[in-house]
Amino acid sequence: MKIVCPHCFQINNIPKKESYAKANCGKCKNSLLQKNLINLGEANLDEVLVNSEIPVIVDFWAPWCGPCKMMGPVFEKVSKNFALKALFAKVNTENEQNLGARFGIRSIPTLAVFKNGKEVDRLSGALDENGLKQLVQKHL
Amino acid sequence: MLDLAIVGGGPAGLTAGLYATRGGLKNVVMFEKGMPGGQITQSSEIENYPGVSDVVSGIELMEKWPEQCQRFGLKHEMVEIQKISKDGDTFLLDTGSETVEAKSVLVCTGSNPRKAGLKGEEEFTGKGVSYCATCDGFFYKEKEVVVVGGGDTALEEALYLAKICSKVTLVHRRDGFRASPATIERVKENDKIELLLESTVEEIVGDKMGVTGVKVETKEGSVDVDAMGIFIFVGYDVNNSVLKNEGGFLCDVNNWGEVRVDLKMRTSVDGLFAAGDVREDAAKQVVCAAGDGATAALSAISYVEGH
Image 1: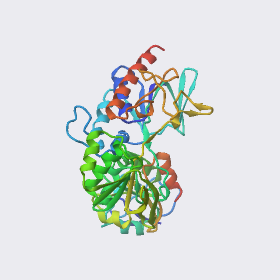
Image 2 (image 1 turned 90 degrees about the horizontal axis):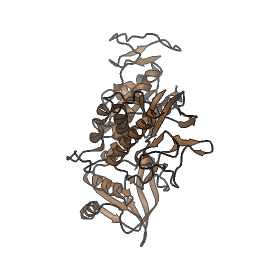
Image 3 (image 1 turned 30 degrees about the vertical axis):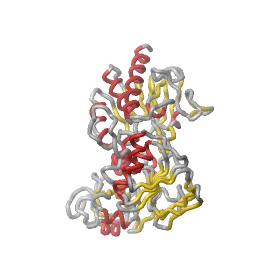
Image 4 (image 1 turned 135 degrees about the horizontal axis):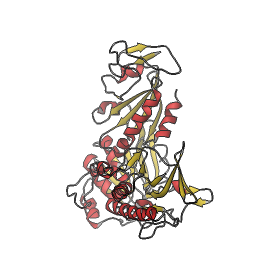
């Protein structure tokens, strides 16, 4: 399956397995078992959405938003449970106003789930750990 | 076993954690599902927290609290407690995946913005219906919005939105406001804010993209107001679900579900304390919640030391 490297955005083709002990990007050699959340903007969002065969969970947020900040560490924690199962990404709607408009974001935090480039689910409002896990699980 | 479990990480919980650990309790954990700070982080402007003389946002006000409050050993667990019960002298806190034991518990779960129950409210939540002007005002730059409510929060947030939006229509069911006179004056003087008093929202209307307007029932009949956003501030519901056990609440609550406490923040159950917006007669101010937290922590210390 096709996996977008969270570090250099190179597309990697890796065998589908139940779990992964180790998987490194063919180009930058960093681990594909995502350690950091990726930040998406107009420049790279489409490429990542189209080329990822695992669901992409996008957190639309902004620095002035209390509930977004509250959910930030939860999003990061949960992302570590879904290595190579789902890709977790953030869009800062203050910097990426065109993306906010394109996706019709009117309230943050908004979580959107994309599969093969298409939006398949969306939820507004802060989620706790269990709520977020359930949302992701639904689309695996 | 924990000496004290603090359920909730707003101003009350953080202050209680500071006082409890600095006051000598060793095993103190604050359970807060995400980053601490509480509901105040949704407020746009705070100018009544003594010692902070600049007008700051809720996020700015709370930014430094966790570091200071955790300096004496308070631990933060990113977990949402589902249920609190008591077995003998021991409190049991259900996290959904395990049970945590504690000698004493402080409930400071605060409150949440109340839904107005309007037609279309549920359908358009996140698509134009909002309960947080600080979060979402940005998406309505130079657009027309509606604010529903007539209390301090509604008026303050209407003023905040008037700085961003081209027009704010404030819909309130009475002819007077329940807010501080200074705020009412500022609202009346603001020419971007139009008041529709003794009026109610009949329906929120919209299309696939979201809200396009509201139908308002006024004294003179029904009017359509164009708006891309509708901000609802009609009060708060206390978050008391952690106290629900089979057969009712763990401790006494009043008719609105607010937890009954005495002046030491003790509930009707020994070793169980409540502080901040979740308790009855709460002033719902940051400074009061913090004070409650300190009081409750001191009471918890003397309870734990006496057992």
